[in-house]
Length: 261
Image 1: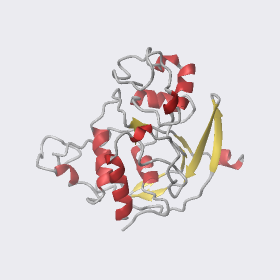
Image 2: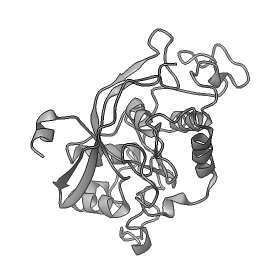
Image 3: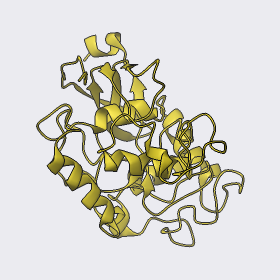
Image 4: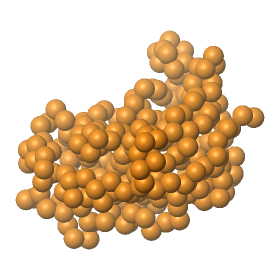
């Protein structure tokens, strides 16, 4: 079975933007088969890109708000975030000391997108995120490793993992931390694939209803962790916030930037 045609090249660089030292890492592009896709276009080509090595923390998001106060707890418009936005912060908009190095949570898609764009970065696409997240510590593609999948699913069952500090787990094959085990993460096209759990067609969620049909069009029926991720994404609206939802940013690959390191 086709999985990938790529070799990981570890490459770090730092961006100092808005006073923040942000470490990114190059994810070498390749081809992979996503959990969902049309039969005519099963393979998806991923261009090389840079990814934050860790999720954005509360402290980093607080620095962002200093420059863009329209995204503060008191100023954000209801159109862009629900009532639980930054709910773990104090009433005057301060980050509790014990959360500073934990992944920021209760942020909407709008706020996450704005954070990334203010740094000349962006949210990853679903395919980019899944492409990087299929790597275990020792394998670039561990989707058929039962222990790897069990570890991810078990992590989803643990309570309040959003309280942990970022970067405390082992990095994956690329050197990226915490793609699993802390929080779900926003992706740019989070609602591009709708899963109702009752439909057997990604194109028509009403016409062909039957029990557990959401799995029928999937390419890997054993990848329970991916099913959960696609399901949670399809349940969200852009203004929604969750205690176990954070984000990280990516950036388009730039060979000139690499040459200058």
